[in-house]
Amino acid sequence: MTINDVIRFLAQEYGLPQWQSQHDPLSELIRAILSQNTSDVNSHRAFDSLISTFGTWDRVAEASIDEIAKAIACGGLSRIKAPRIKSILNRILNDHSSLDLGFLGQLPLPEARAWLQSLPGVGPKTANCVLLFSLGMPALPVDTHVYRVCRRLGLIGPKVSPARAHQVLEELIPAEAIYQFHINVLAHGRRVCRAQRPRCSECILLEGCVYGKGAIRATGS
Image 1 (spheres, rainbow, N blue to C red):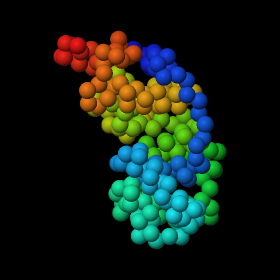
Image 2 (cartoon, helix red, strand yellow):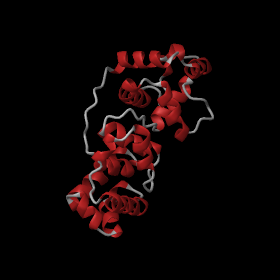
Image 3 (cartoon, rainbow, N blue to C red):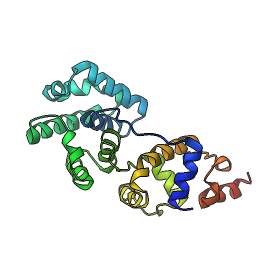
Image 4 (cartoon, rainbow, N blue to C red):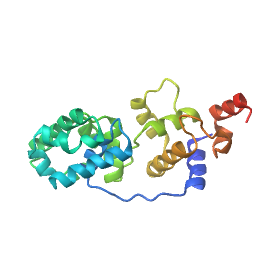
C-alpha cells in the first residue's frame, strides 16, 4: 500500500480536514510543552490555568519559576515544565525583544524548525506542532498514534526512532497532504489502530497492513 493509498482511504473514512490556525505560534509552543508526557485533558487544564493566572505571556515571562509551576501543577511534571517555559520565554525576549513568533512563518521550513529546536525542551514533535498548527507549514508531528499506525503499515521500519520518523514520513507525504495525513492518522490511531486491542477486522487499511493480517490470523477473527 502506497502513501497515496493511505491518504485516500483515510480521507474516505474520516473526511478532508481543513487547516485553520487555533493559536498564535507562542501559544501553540507553550501548549505543546505542556502536552509532553501527559494527557490532552491535563495539558489543556494546565494551559487554561496558566492563561487565567497571568493573562499574558509577558506576565508569565516576568513570573518566578515557582509561580509558573503552581499555575500548571494540574497538568503534571510542573517542576520540569515550569523552568522550561521560563527559559524559553527569556530566550525569545533576549533574542527578539518581543514574544511574537510570527517571524517563523517567513523562514524556510528547515530554518524555522531548527530555530525552535534550539529552545530548551523542544524536539521535532513540539517544533512541528507549532509550525503545522499555528502557521500551516508542512511539518509533520509524529506522536504515539502516528508512530504506531505508520510502523504497523510499514511506512517506517521497525528500527526507525520517533525522532527519525519525522524526516522519513515528511519525505514520503506530499506537502499539501501533511495536515490531512496527521489529523486522519491520529483519528485512526485513537479509534481503530489502538495500542491495545486494535480493531484490525474493521480497519479500512487492512488490505495493505501486514501487522493487521497477522493479528487476525493469530486471533482467528
